[in-house]
Image 1 (cartoon, one colour):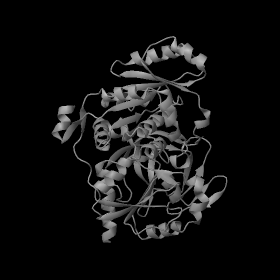
Image 2 (cartoon, helix red, strand yellow):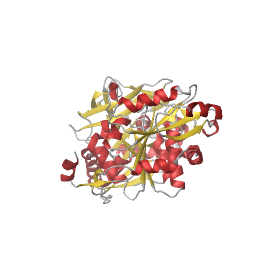
Image 3 (cartoon, helix red, strand yellow):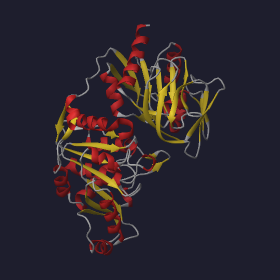
Image 4 (cartoon, helix red, strand yellow):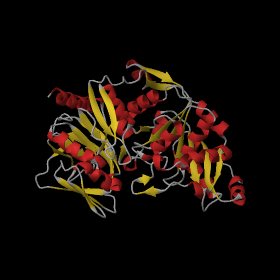
Length: 453
């Protein structure tokens, strides 16, 4: 792969790097990974954070800790070359990269390796530190470790951090057996836990607990040993040049506040690279800015429905859609564009899409999506395909005349494998898309057409 990539302007990068993986979800890998980032940052390292998979929430904690945008690395959505390209671009100017895994180390799509932490570790030729929750076991923890070490010889499980060690006696029982280099023994710290809700952990803007875990990692882990592992890596191909910044040919408004906060950083970079100036604003607090198109990401409109209903931006957006402005919305943005949202109470929303959003107590859609544009406004050109992810606790009750722009080869969407409810020049979908260059260019072109009109 390396020689092929070099033909397209790639260079090699030997940045120190390490993957923090877990035996399973809930073992503590997010707190350990975030604590490691905080401890390294506290020692003066410039840390570039990453998250395996499509998650939006963990990267907010990484970004707050490291002061650099955390990037998603997802082979299903990006492809292997996309993982390498994003990794290489993001690591410029960094001293070390810390990659937080997803689920268990070997858990991938449909019971395969695809999209797993193990696959990303292989692509990046990175050593893996395995986080093991030792609650309720002692010597058995080593049997778990041994299984992970030997399951796939191409994955370098280079060390282990034992988490939630209960007492000195518990630690002694664990230490009586040795199966892999031990890089840390972290005691249970319920006082530093991070609260969760229906879509996962609370966002970084709501808690600073993750950064406080840096002191725990500094005290309980072999930080020098971890840095040594991270440095003992081979060069790998990475992108030779950063994406160009926006030329300002068009202005695209990006809703960003506690109600709309789920964006892949690569998507924003691709829009800028295609020529857009990105204008961030808050539908909760601001009037609609002077822009040529809008991108409404996912988030928590249901938690801020009253404020969104009362905001003057809602009326501004109605007028903009009536004027023909291109509006592209995902998940929470889709909910915002409907007529109203039902939960404990009912609130009016923007009302440009012929549908009502209803919050539910159970997950209505979760998993990867593969979409093809089959119609709708020319915000995304017909025939383009992209991949993404859906995760929502709402459902959309559409009018009988509802029209959809996306056909899904994989995923649930709004109804019967269709997504992308559209009206006038606005489209709303449950799919959080990972933009291709063609998708980003299409959005910018739609903004250009509106600007000229």
